[in-house]
Length: 308
Image (cartoon, rainbow, N blue to C red; front, side, top):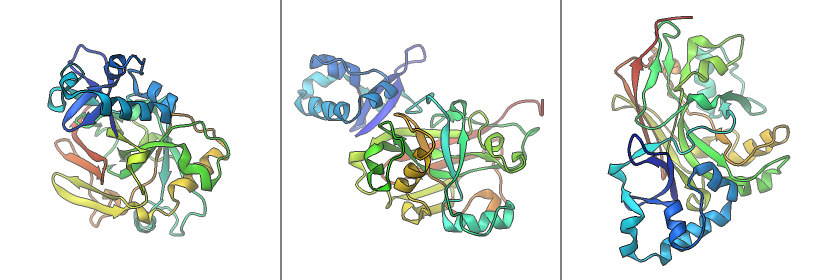
């Protein structure tokens, strides 16, 4: 099941929808047709858990095709927002989680050439999230090294505290795509949040695919292009720390809550690791893709007047 947050017009409020066969089915209206009060927003839906997912599946199967005229609109006629436009707390980012990316980072970013013994965790604020189609802001007074990172994003569906590796996938609501935009020259004494947490530095979406629709999240191709030229390509089977390990490790000390997002790390091919190095500039278009989920397409635009 592919869930989206959409807006029918500039003036209308953001609503929760089911993307199916090029239509966006309004979930609140679907529930109302069957006499059930379903949420109109993604986070409220995730809070309910698997019961909400099963209810939507059942209602779609029971709804006559003639009734969809009042429930659905063509996907081309709506604006898709980020699936969770503003998470309740920071995104959990994972650094150095593909072996080849560890190697390229050690050559160009002064990180260790040794493989991490534990997940490397940082965060990106909710204000960094944008939707596919939104612009990535480039302030040339702040950064001259704007970089890309395609990643599989995991969306948590249940409160997870000290979860075991064996049970960790039971806490996943679904999966999405995230582009971990990074200003490489903005790292500060080993701290990454200013480099990675700036406004617009987390393109996210275009949908959340529920966990039941992704049989194996550790066998998904992911790739990224800049101006149509491929820069990254790998598969999630190459994750150094897989999703259960990440969930178990974070939840050992930090409670994960419904709607929390874990960006699982990026493979080799980032701009900093290329020879010569390559960076994003105003006018570029970057596309990040994960098999079975979708594509983020974001232009880069010039903003700001330099450093504060």
